[in-house]
Length: 530
Image (cartoon, helix red, strand yellow):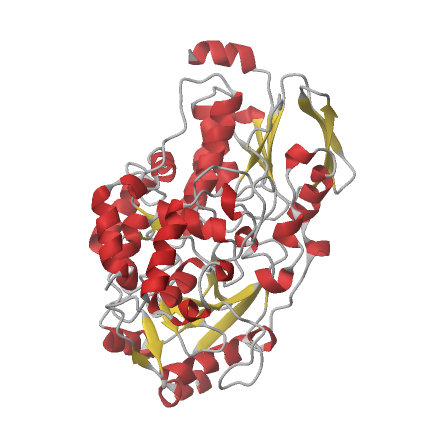
């Protein structure tokens, strides 16, 4: 079978726009399953490094930065199968999947300080839902997605719902907001119903050994390069021409920012990552705030807007990118040449690093959360350097202590606000004065764009009807029933694209269907009734 495919497609070139997880996964499947020679696969990336939203970089002197990590769990069927083929950088005889499995067997999530108020741990043994809120929760899992249209979460639940333990745990873990899409929340509730019982302690949440750039992206890039796949960095696609007729749609020309173009041959293909949650991001410093950028600096959103004008089957980007004030939030990464903060949190929470997970300050005006990963979180992180990551969902509100909005704050000011909520200003002051702390804030204008209320056709199908040589990839292509803001969603769209356009003997992995498993349904009902 593969020999036949190789003979048929040996002269085909495939151009992948975007080097996020969806683009990298597509390249793996194209070479491994569709038989496209590696040297005929071209990954076109506007940035200087691959990885998209799963990035991570830095050093002891300049400070480390992770814009944000993506949640992992055992039932990412597409994702873990993909990583079973990718050798670990540290031991090529071990796959990234098995490296991650081993890591999670040793460091099990069991957060003991999930929610805080006034610097003290809150009791999360109950979700604190009223009878009506429990009823609304169950009703939401039973209605059809089509019936919800572009409703917001706040259109379904009463206002008291947003002061419950359940909401604080849910909103901080998944980054949903009151005004987020109700349809997307429904997908999450059904897709992850097997996690509902353990959410207060982050049970079932998995992590990679290091940050996801070093643990996943770098090994995938090395694997692909060894197969001959060509990475073309700093190569920005600004438009695509199509030949459109009543029954067929074909991509014909790729236009680049540098005024060059690629004319697609009759056997060529293009995979398009439309939209990006980390486009236009900006890093601040210890002394300066991050700058909020917009659509003018965004390559992926402008490209999608240009494409969408040509055919309604190419989706509608506007609901996802035209309201930055409802989509943005800010994160920060602290680098400490001192263990005082981590030692305090270990004693306070009862969790050693890598086992506690997200800690949310419920009385923070910014609704600030932070997480201490297992150290080291970077392969080049010295033993005497500690890092942690945090974010705030409401960056336009003034801090409780600083008196500035989060968006106006430098890295130093964000940490001062955090120390205030934890009641550790006196402990941390000498560490800061000694110059042992750095903190880099990041502004992300589109980070919550995938949760914006939308209509059913606003995300294009991975392979639009009639498409002959192109597909859409990533978080803004439609993978029915699965959940955006996950690496699983990205890999699923890659499988859908490759297995849908090419004659392989492979099928897209079925989703894990815990929503129809009586065991998990009963456990979830028991949990929300506590």
